Amino acid sequence: MSAQLLDGKLISAEIIDEVRSQVDARVALGRRAPALAVVLVGDDPASAVYVSNKKKACERAGFRSLSYEFPASLSETDLLALVEKLNADPSVDGILVQLPLPKHIDAEKVIEAINPLKDVDGFHPYNFGRLALKMPLLRPCTPHGVMVMLEKTGVDLVGKDAVVVGASNIVGRPAALELLLARATVTVCHSKTRDLADKVRAADVVVAGVGIPNFVKGDWIKPGAIVIDVGINRLDNGKLCGDVEFEPARERASWITPVPGGVGPMTIAMLMRNTLDASINLNP
Ligand code: GUN
Image (cartoon, rainbow, N blue to C red; front, side):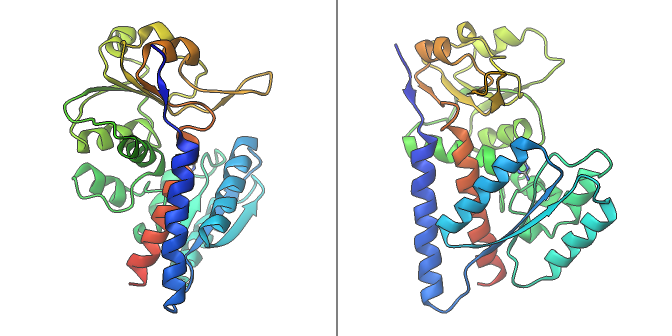
């Protein structure tokens, strides 16, 4: 059997079109378009690509995008001052500080400084806590994008055994909370997990977010499983690859996300959705 592909590119385009229609309808009623502030510190090449894609999506969604780009030498104090300025600016609905930040800046402190109602990444403890308590507001974009992609494809998660590989704040932990909210039975694996391969072999759903190319082996995948690959790794030959060995996994799975064109575009679509939601919440 060869798995069907979960087409994140297509579904993302549909969501951005829906957001655009809602924005146009609000603008026609005299409201202003949502505005997203994107902050990039340093010169990480992958971050620069992500930020540029986010700005392009803002255009497609009909948003105003504000761009703040700084050298890696920016001080924590200056970054916190910018966040405070954006918090206080009523013309800004969403604030996104691209991660990772340079080592001398405490990312947790910066995330906590963002007004939770403008936290379109869903990373603030307030939004994370709401997701944990089954009362989500602004949800972390990548795991929420995974859930929307599965919903829109008609894949049901109720009662399924889900294994999340990786326990990061951006992917693994919020993915576990999303899967739990969707009533899957969730196991979270991390660097100290024993018998990882056996845990993955038992999974109906595998979500991989470790940032290591081909870390999850194709022969670990249970026949018929759903495989969600959140990894975006650039190989020495310049090609992108995921955290799962794609071809052998595809032979066993029922559904699989490609890299690129799977989860990546969904993250951006959910960022657009969150920014529109934040704008509506702030200016009903
Ligand atoms: N770095 C990698 N993924 C993300 C994301 O979703 N949001 C932010 N702010 N930084 C990231």
